[in-house]
Image (cartoon, rainbow, N blue to C red; front, top):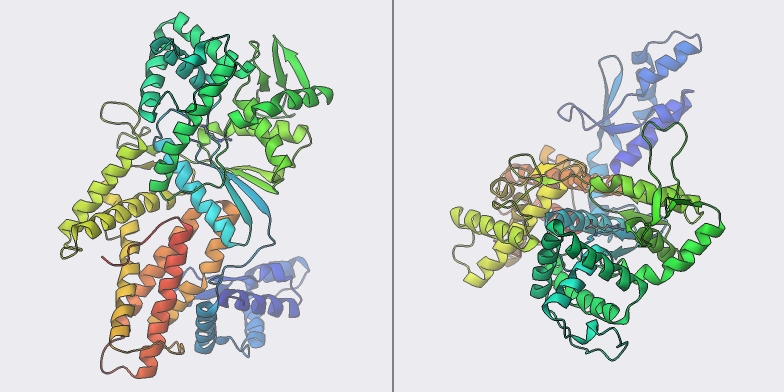
Length: 592
Ligand code: ARG
C-alpha cells in the first residue's frame, strides 16, 4: 500500500529514466512551497548538469517539459506545472487522495512500513539501586520508551532492559553504612555463610538515607572511604552476607523503581543490572586474555582501543583496576557477553546521556575487537541535558538533583492550574479532574522532552510545557479529545461514517499530512529520533484544525455523503493521532 509520495516518486523516477537520466536524481518530495503545490521534483536541474557533462546543451526547463509530457497521463497525477528554472510541481488527483485515505483507514498498521524483523535490545532507564531517580533518568526513560515503541511498530522484536546500576561503590557505601548503624545484623557476621533472613533489613527510605550519608562522610574522611572500598571489594569477591544484602537492596529498589517508572508510563521487559552479569566476568577476562587483546598496565588490566590517525586519543578500556575491582567498562562488556548468548540481538541501542559517549565508544570498540559484535550492531543514542533557566543542568532551589517524583508533582500542579484557568473539566468529578491533570502534566513533560532533537539541551519550563496553544503535549491531547467528542456527538445524532471522498483544499491537506505518517515513523526509527514523529503529529493536529473549521460536519447544509466522508476523515485522524502518541508513550484522556 504505497503512500502518495511513494507513488509520485516512482513516477518521476521512471520518467527521468525513460529520458536517459539516472532515477536517483529524480525523486519527488514534499514541496518547500505547499502553497504552490504539495509535491515537487527537482530532477531537471541535475539532469541538465549530466547532459552538459555529456557534451549536450539542454535547458533544464526543456527537460522538465519532456518529463511532464510523460507524467501527464499518470493516473495519480492531476496537474503538473514547471516553475522557475525547471522545478516540477505535482498535484495528486482527488481520487488518489480518497483511495489513500480509505486504505490508511483500513490498515491495521496505520500505514507504517513493516521492516524485516530484527531482535533489538534497548538499554535505557539505567536507574541506580538505592539512589533516587532524578531528571537524568527521566530523559533516558522517556526517549528510550519512545524508541522501543517505534521500532516495535515496524515489526521488530524489541526488548527493553532497564540495566540498573547495582554493582559499584554505591553498594559498598550502603553495606558499610548499614554495618555502622546496625553492626549486629547477621549479614556482618564473617563466620556465617547462609540462612540469612528472607525479610529485607531496609526499606527504600532507609536506602535513600544511607547512601548520601555514606557518600558525604566518605568525601571528607579517607578512612570512611576505605571502609566503603573494602566492602565493595568483598562484595565483588563474593562475601556471602554482603551478597545476601545486595539481593535485598536490589529487590527493595526494583519494587520502588517499578512504581516510579510505572508513573511515567515506562515498562521494561528485563530488570537486569550490572550485578547479574558479575558471574560472567572471570570467564570473559580469561577469554579476552587468551585472545591476546588485553595488556597489564601499572597493575591494571586494559584493552587498548585507540585507532590510527585519530585527532583525540581514545583511552583504553579498563577491565580491572589495580585493586582488582571491576569497573563500569567491565560490567558493560560482560553485559554484551550476556546479551550475545541471549537474545543474541541484531542491534543494541543504548539510550544514555551524551556525556557517556566516550564510555560507549570504548566499550563498543573492545567488543568489536573481541569479535563479539560488528560495529553497526551497537549504537549509543545519546541525549542532552534538561537545564534550568540558568542554562545549567536542572537543580532544585537548594542546589540538589531534583527527584523524579518531585518533578512529576511540579508538572501535575502546573497542569492542574492550566486546566482550572481555562475552565476545562469544571463540571467533572474531582477524581476525573485529578486524573486529567496527571495525564496532561505527563504528556506536557514527555512531549516537551521528545520534540527536541535528542542531542539538544532544553530548558525546563512547566508554564510553557503545559500551554494549550503551540507545539505542546496539551495541545495534542486537546486535539484528540476534541475529535473524540465530535465523533461521540455524531454518533448520538445518528450520523455514521461513510466512504471518503476528498474534495476541499483543507481535506486534501489533511490527507497529505496523514499520508506522511509512515515516513515519519520510518525516519524516526532510522535516526532514533522521536522528534520527527512529534513534528508529524503536530502537523496532523494542525491540519485537522484547519479542516474542521473549513469543512463543517454536523450542520444542516451538508449532505449525508459529505458528512459520512468527513466523519471518516475525523476517525482516521483520531486513529493516527492516538497511534502516534502511543508510540511516543503519551496517553490521552477520554475527555476534558
Ligand atoms: N546507571 C548508569 C547511570 O546512572 C546508566 C546505565 C546506562 N546503561 C549502560 N549499559 N551503561 O549513569
